[in-house]
Structures are given as structure tokens and as C-alpha cells.
Length: 440
Image (cartoon, rainbow, N blue to C red; front, top):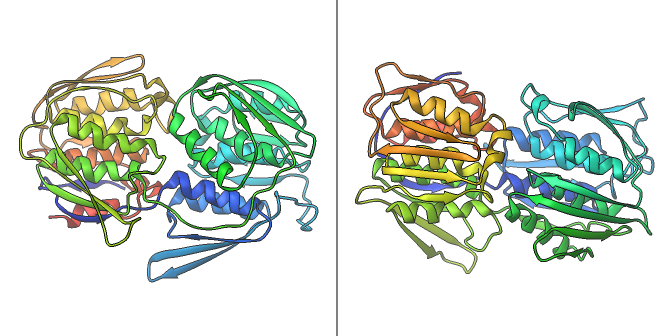
């Protein structure tokens, strides 16, 4: 689907969708628990639906409650560690799980599947079949788990059980380590999982995962810099009742839209104390010349943040190692700044749904914005405005963050811009295109 975005100032009060990272972790943990959990106000997106499908294949029972078009909660009856035999699951030669476009679901569920002696095959869409899990699979092999793949990519077949072992795990994506942290505690009593981590990107997501282990009383040992972990088996996840916090990754796009167009937005439901690293985008906007003001709502846990811009945007230099998902939004914001903006230490942005460094450089050039591509980032040579040619068509590359980034860039242009594969925005931000269209 193509969408044509007409320039206009972006303003208003916006309810931010729930965090994908939290939603998927809570889904998996609830499905692993013994008992019934309730997840309130989760993200209802293509990626979370893929995770729900995976959890159902593993044996969890999930009931969805809605009010109109809005999802209110998921009630999940867990499968006590995905114990397929105890719950009389069907015993085909191989269970199959299609994760769609959800890399988070794929990586986290791969490790969980290693707890079972039942063979489980994972597949996904065309993009997923190009995203390597090779370092994670090497680690799982070190714990006695059988892994068969297409050079580290899906389709991937996993067969446990999990045994004691010590492995080295390179983490160009933190999801590899989060996968082991979620699954390893459920290995048999007496099992010890030891992990050396010589490379770790996206550390805030590990802090997020560890916050769940702490909340459930699951023991582990770690070095202060997360370079080493020891996790004993024999633990269990507990049933819980939690509300999913709003997503800073998604909030970056309406925040950037206000910065680009000189508008003003109030973003609801974000928690300034949440572990999500992508709240760094608000700091980026402040450095570039925006006003960012947090205000407490009617209760202690209710917050809103206001973003506006009165003067010009200026360039800056930003380390995105902890927050690679911010690169598309930061790059289009930099296109409207005066001077150069450097986004660096983010080579892992090349292994997302697309090579986002190369894609952003290529598509920004169509708008007359020139970039210097670095091995680990991008320098955007901003001129304070963009003036694309008539009838410009941006290739969204079927990447939700690329599509959303160029939709907000179009708001600040002097002519409408057309973007392809726009439907994929629903992967993490359902209703985003309608939000852009109706905000006139």
C-alpha cells in the first residue's frame, strides 16, 4: 500500500501505544508461568499477534478482552514452563511456529524452545528469513540443544533439553542475551547456565529483561557491565497482573513530527523512570533546540511530556549504540537541522528489518538531503529544510520505522511525498498513518 502525506504542522495530545518490548516479554513470561496472568493495555500490533500465535503453539491459553477497537487486556493461562507433555499437547513430528515479521518473538522463543525435547521449527516472512540468529544458535548448541538452520537464518529447528554449559555470546542485538535470561532459569534443577558476553549492544533492553527476573525473585549473578552471567536452573516464572507502559520507540515519531514542523505535542502514558533506552530521543530533541517538559498527571504514576520548538533546529553528535531503533527518526529530524548531525556507534542498525543506515542515506537523497555513510552510522548534512522534487516516491522497504520516519519528514516538506509499503507501520504502531492523516 502507498500513502501520500501532505505537509502540515503537527500538533495535539497523543496517547502513545504500549511498548512492544514489554508486551512481548510479558506475553512469554505469562505463558511460561504456572497460573493465570493478566496483561493490561498491551500493544495490539502485528508483532504481538505473532507472539500470541507462538505462545498458543507452545500450549498457553490466551483470552483477549476488547472495548470497541481497543484491546483492554490479555488473560493468559500459563503452561508451567511450556511443559508440552504434562499438558497433553499434540505430538506431531515437529511443531511449527510462524513469527511473521517479529524478530523479538523469533529470538526469545528460540531459546525457550530449547527447554523442550519436542522438535520445534520456526519460520517467518521474507525479512525474518534474512535475519541471522547464528550467535544465539551457537550458544544454544553449547547447552546441548540441537539447532538446524539455513546458515543461521529461518527456517530454524530447535530440540532440547537444556544442559549445563558455559558459552561465549556475541550480542550485536541484545535480544540474544534476553532470550537466554528468560529461558535459562527454567532449565532442570542442578543445571547451571554460564554466559560470557564479549560484545553487548542495546544494554537498556537487558536492564528491562533483568527487571522481570528481579520482580519474580529469579536468582542470577552478573558482572556490573553485563559481561558475565551465571543462572541456576530450577526456578519458575510466577503468574502476575501488570499494565504495559507506553513505548518510547513509538513516541519518537510524533515527537519528531512536532520538532520538524514547529508544532507542539503532548504525549501521554510515558514513564520517565522506565528502563526503555529510547527515552534518549527526548534528550536528543532538547540538544537540537526543542523544549521538552515533563508534567505529572492526576496520580503519582501518571505522566505526560510536552515537546515544542520555537527556534531553529541545530545539528549534533549522538551515540545510538543503546538505542539503534532511533536512527530513522533521528536521521529525518537531522535533515531539518542547520549543520551536520552525526549518528554513530550504531553498526547494528544494519541488521534490523533492513540495513537502516544504507536505506536512510539512499531515501534521504531523494529528498535532496545528502548524507555521509559511515561503517557504524550516518552523517546527515542538514540545511534547515527539505525541498523534494514533485511526485517524489520514497521506498518504505517494508520496514515500519523507515515508513514512519519518512511520513513525518513529509509533514515538513514543501510538497506531498508518497511512501510505499506503508501498511507495515502496523507492525508496532497501529493507527499511525491515520494519526498523521487526521492531524491537519
